[in-house]
Image (cartoon, rainbow, N blue to C red; front, side, top):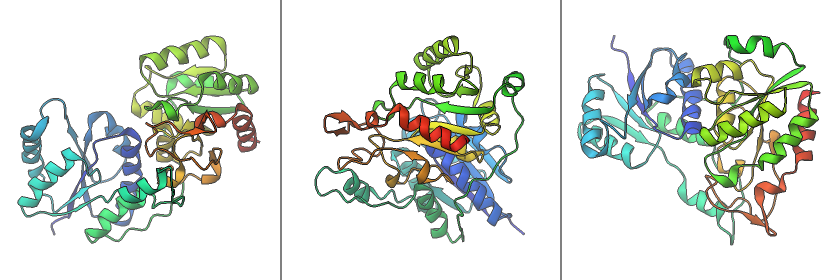
Length: 338
């Protein structure tokens, strides 16, 4: 009997791809005979390592898969899998071109509905429609439902037992609690003042803090924290994605911005306290299995002003993210670890 194969596309961003991995675990658990071909950037492959019957096919959009000709080359590569369905979970220009190739080839396909108008209504300044939107992961699930797959998401954290990276074994045993911190984000209006983190670290000298995520500048900041606080440990530039997931899975808790750190915590079943400014969990990007009660935010009529955090959100002359005080985060962390 021929197995059913579905091609899934989601090229970026990191948090969205991690959310797709959470979804595909649920899909595979409910349809064990299904074979999945996942197309995304090579950097994200570790998100999908433990999903049964999944083949990861990398896209190199700046190299051999660049432009329409490159996407045609990718289409030819993917045809070899003899797929039955195409699930476009991105709905951007690249995925649309690729999906068009499959459509003309007679493949059955479904495309993500991003709910763009509802999101515009949520973030507009006047006559804002402030109501929770459909969670993004449910929008992903709808794509498979449109293809005929039954799928029920329970939206609960599922702990993943993964090995603690060897270098962190002696550190891990020295503290009462081990906390992950993802203090950086791609867009500035989602980043809490870095000086605030120093107050958090100072208030929990008996906890270990592990800093995740970022480039060279963030690595320098995290290295400075590590020098100044003996219980703060930077992982930036030292761990790959797989080892980051391994370490996160052995933590008690993660503190994150509205960023990929939250979604990586969800992927390995770890609770996350998240800090929100210009964005809002109502937009549908709360981590899978995470609780809105763990979102640290200050409600204001101007919030949210942005879906992705790339636009300023002034609230009585103060940036929305700055409404969150160190005391709020410290109190929340105390409650969560008491």
